Amino acid sequence: QSVLTQPPSVSAAPGQKVTISCSGSSSNIGNNYVSWYQQLPGTAPKLLIYDNNKRPSGIPDRFSGSKSGTSATLGITGLQTGDEADYYCGTWDSSLSVLFGGGTKLTVL
Amino acid sequence: QVQLQESGPGLVKPSQTLSLTCTVSGGSISSGDYYWSWIRQPPGKGLEWIGYIYYSGSTYYNPSLKSRVTISVDTSKNQFSLKLSSVTAADTAVYYCARVGREFDYWGQGTLVTVSS
Image (cartoon, rainbow over all chains, first blue to last red; front, side):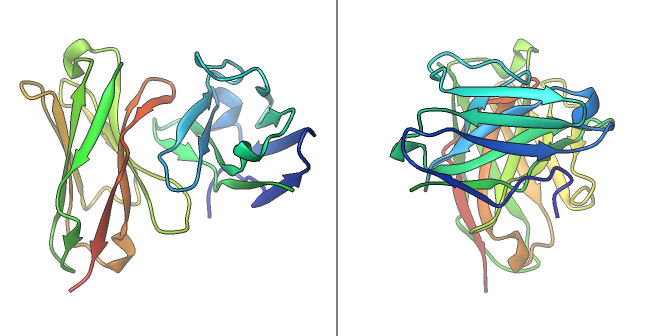
């Protein structure tokens, strides 16, 4: 059971928008930056969002991140079949440990 | 472009020690700007952070694994290593090494380690 709570799965049609939530507490998300990772089938995770809402070079602006209080959200617009993947949120806790959410499987119908 | 590559045995017997090495290229572990981390993922499950190390040798471990984990660094080879003792089938996973600042920005491709007799 992960300390950071994500929905196990989300789905939407191509071209639509989807959001994935990540819920934590004041000892983790509430006082630390959140990052998001995309894991395509059979591959290593890839950094998608860092510092709550920043995108690394090469990540399209279809991907966005936000944080409010003890929760964070990943948004994906203009869904493509290539976006089908597992998505993980990550942050730190007050003891300098790293926390990952349980992961959310995105299905593009 | 920073690259990380895991190496080590793909099969370990129960009760033995799992040992992996991560070789970093395209950047120096000694730069001091980042930590270097191990993460694992059991088949069909999510990511689990194992621990990280600074070039100076300072380490931080997942409390749930702390009694069995040792992470070390060899700056002369630009490598860092993982040792996990007393393994069981529950330690079967893909093991990743990664560079970490406030986020994990570069990852290795991962290596599957199976614990079985």
